[in-house]
Amino acid sequence: MKRPVRSTLHFLVSILVGAAGISLVLYFVGWRETFASIQAVSALGVVEVFATVLLTVAAWVVGWRILLRAYGIHASLGRVIGARLSIYAVSYLTPTLYFGGEPVGVFLIADKAQAPATRVFATIIVERFLLGVSFTLLMLVGGFHAAMHPGISPTQKLIFLAGLAFIAAWIVIGLVNFARNLKWLSRIIRWLGRRIPRCEERLCRAAAKVSETEDEVSYAFTRHRRATLVVFLVQIATSLLTLIRPQVFFGASVGLRFTFGQLAMLFSLYILLGFFLWITPGGLGTSEAGAIGIFRLIAPGITTGQAVAYSLLFKCAEVVFVVIGVCYLMQRGLGFLERRAARPPTSGEGGEAART
Image (cartoon, rainbow, N blue to C red; front, side, top):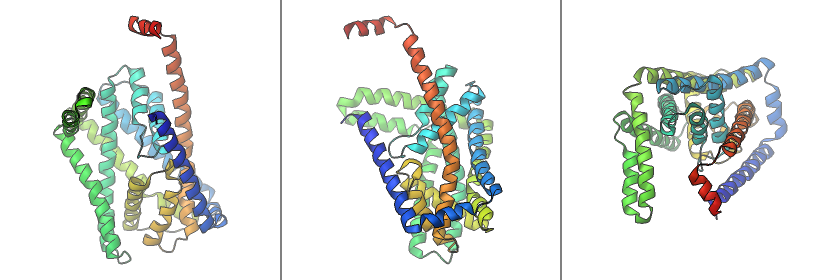
């Protein structure tokens, strides 16, 4: 089966799985209870939910633009916003087991700014990596509180801490690799090329591009330290905005107040859930089912309907930006294809056309 067809089938299957999952959740929880919990949120609360997501997206844009400028890539603010929302939309809608939206962002920026694709991709990697570091720091706080929490069984603590250790280990490996420019990834690709002779040439070309990107990423820790530090602080702000989401929703709906330790544990469990179970568009179905278990563990007073309502209301706010990203991507993508069609063919392209 051809790769595009296979990817399309995977995407369609994931949609069906997500639809089935959310349907089952609403059936067992009760859709009336869920929507009653959503209606319990005040108008100001709905604005606060939307504002939390808006500020998070805005921080992503600001952080990425700072990196782009530090790397000498001058793209307009509108282009950066559109490209960042396009990345978000594609990553949100496609399960992480298949592909993300980062290549889309590279295409949109590099095409307009006439910048090397490897350099643009490096800025995305740095931005994502710094976000991962900020997430990990808050997750360590959540792990400490989870280890002390009397309501969590030893087995649950072990699973929680093992998942946290797994993610933290990869963050540390990435930090060492990028900061010291050890080029582990390109070395692995070259090693695979030597072990698979029929793919050696293709893998060597890929390794060269990856090595170039690794060089660009390492500049964030050598040539662009000030910009990297500023972006890291921005990413901490985005992590804190994600951390306070339960407080925003449940404070507006039932007047509930969480401790910082509870918020850190909820944050950590949600990150772990997304890391391992984002297998449907938007985590549809899996995140709602996970929310029930997470809140039952950390805040047993929250009902299943309220937990599902929390997940769905934030999804509604996120979908607004997903739709904007999809529309922007369709508009810019079609414009690029039109420019390419209008471009006069080179001699190589003309010869190829003549042969076909």
